[in-house]
Amino acid sequence: MTSPEPSVFSRIIAGEIPATFIAETDRVVAFPDVAPKAPVHILVVPKTEQYANVVELAAADPGLLAEMIEVAQTVADEQTGGDFRLVFNTGPGAGQTVFHVHAHVLGGGLEEGNLG
Ligand code: 5GP
Image (tube, rainbow, N blue to C red; front, side):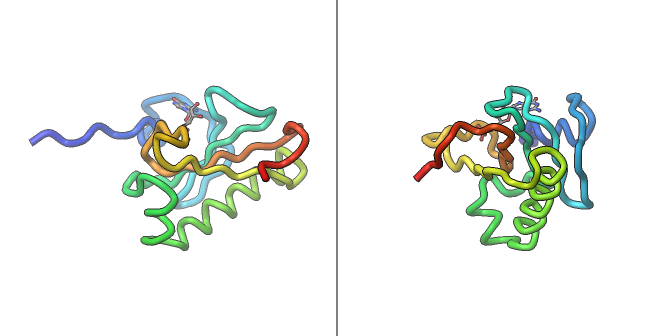
């Protein structure tokens, strides 16, 4: 039986792909996105890859989701003055490419306006 390939984020967490961790808790890490879409673009990722997206995570472990959001705020406090946009792409049709749940923390000179 073959085991599934680890996600790119699991490989980063394992130290197999380089990334600079800018925040870390027992269950969550944060590191810059390799292809930033904003002046500040950080990924906040749980160390477990058992949840493919935020809907699965929220249903199974809302405390871990809350921990991710706390880490997002910590990162934003350090890098954007505290304000940030939090994006969870959910499903390929919404642009999700890595099916290991992660939050995009975007900030620092976002385009004017909001998404509404
Ligand atoms: P998604 O499109 O799934 O919401 O976001 C995946 C994100 O992971 C993309 O923004 C992409 O740039 C980022 N990414 C993919 N591979 C790597 C990598 O090896 N290192 C880092 N730091 N980010 C990556």
